[in-house]
Image (cartoon, rainbow, N blue to C red; front, top):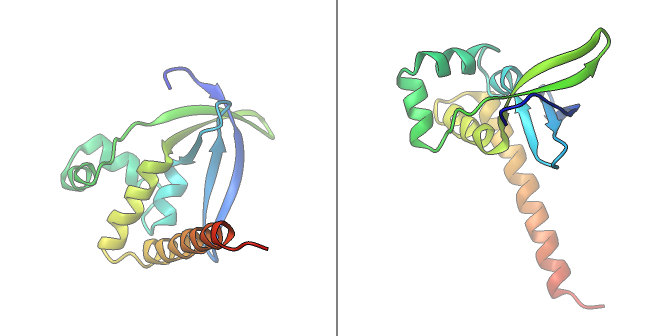
Length: 134
């Protein structure tokens, strides 16, 4: 996304104490705030932006697992008018979770467990719906 676009914003709660600012763009795609993504996996809110700008070992380790580092900007309504937010894709957020969990960050491990359980439950529901006939 080269232009700043308007998006819908919501707080997404994954499990107790772990949440991110989620954004839905007009095309139906979803993104995550870079600051809340960093906090959700157990790092400081400026962790991702700092590592992207430094291009050091952490950034290289993220790239090895497919992290693109594409940061987009959107505008959302706020109490004082409009707010600009910097975002990453869902794919990059999932790679951040994997990285942080591999570093032993308890928040990332809890988030990974919650997402895995939800995905497995959904997978089983779909399977049983397809194979069960009334």
